[in-house]
Image 1 (cartoon, rainbow, N blue to C red):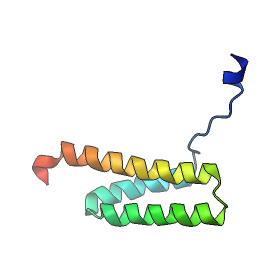
Image 2: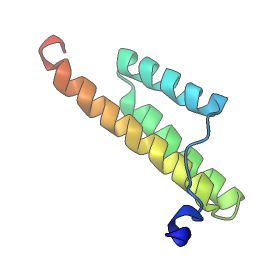
Image 3: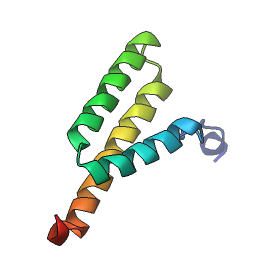
Length: 84
């Protein structure tokens, strides 16, 4: 039981970057430039992972951002299919 409580949990930091990604997501859904933004995020992830020698936190952050962007895009597409 003690081993479970002493584990270090990696979570997304509450930083301006996270707010930037949310704003970016909203702009993406409004303008329809989903693939462009996703590609930008992926390239940023590769660049930062290479620059910071594959730090786990950096890779996790960008991977999560890309997955959230994909999830929200699919959810938006499914809920607004009749208006697109």
